Amino acid sequence: MGADGISKSTMTTDTLNDNDVDAINRLAEISQQLRAELARVIVGQQDTIEQLVVCLFARRHALLMGVPGLAKTLLVSKLAETMSLDFSRIQFTPDLMPMDITGTDILQESDHGRREFQFVKGPLFANIVLADEINRAPPKTQAAMLEAMQEHRVTVLGKHFPLDEPFMVLATQNPVEQEGTYPLPEAQLDRFMSLIELDYPSEAEEIQIAKTTTGDELPQLDHLLTAEDILAYQHLVRRVPVPDHLYTYAARLVRKTRPDGETAPDWMRPLVSWGAGPRAVQNLILGAKSRAALKGSYMVRLEDIQHVAPSVLTHRIITTFAAQSERVTAKTIVKRLVEETAV
Image 1 (cartoon, rainbow, N blue to C red):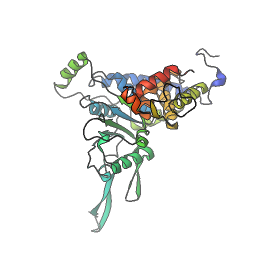
Image 2: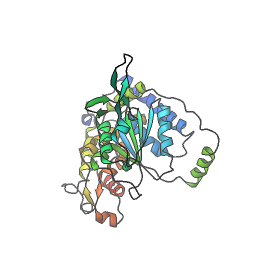
Image 3: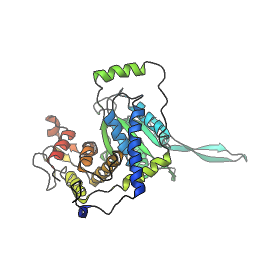
Image 4: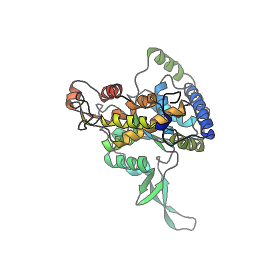
């Protein structure tokens, strides 16, 4: 039994070499520097920043939920700036067509006097794409976004065009109750690793926001990494070891969210109509690996999985009318399941 209480026989075959250990130490330092840089322009939101960075290095997408005016756009653009990544913002509207985001072929006259079709790239061709108010888009545009998020490519007139790596979609979503919004399809929600909920700032933070944003121009942030560095760290995160019993814990936690399953607790069955799928287990493990590496840990711990569980599972659970009438949210259900699930 090791010093951390984990038997060597329960470890997976993944191991870190000396170079990986040094790289994790550097990544932990960079994580601290990133927080300090973003704090120059973003007041508060430390938990939001941590979850965004976890998604970035896990090579996954994130959904930001919050009312307008909480600096979601500023946060994402400044994150891209510190990472030396190309940033693109798409404002979704009900009349937005797929070619508006993917690009399209246009007829151009070549140097030889001939007319040829030339593909002009759309705003999806960036490293970090902010899909603003994604739940305002029509179904065809949602389908184009779904292909980009899953396949890291777009299809235009039967031709495939790969997207630049690293590629990450950070989508903002206003509460569905607001006028002109449509619930995202469950298949697309499942493509987002995390649902990151932003709340109103405290009074002290709101005063600081007013002081910061009503002065001169915002400062330029330092570039901490390059695209090549991020790709290398994304591969490093995949190599972080996970004890076998934590794989079991993640699977059991997800299986408990399914009301028709044998392990679902009795109190949950009338509250949930649809639980999380296998992709949730993958994202729990990936999110835990990413968080462990960012914290400078050489192995995933139970607290890493428990920390990412609410953001990974909440948007994958569909509550019943009974739950909604009793004001029981998916987040509350996930919190109780995490507390009741034993290792």
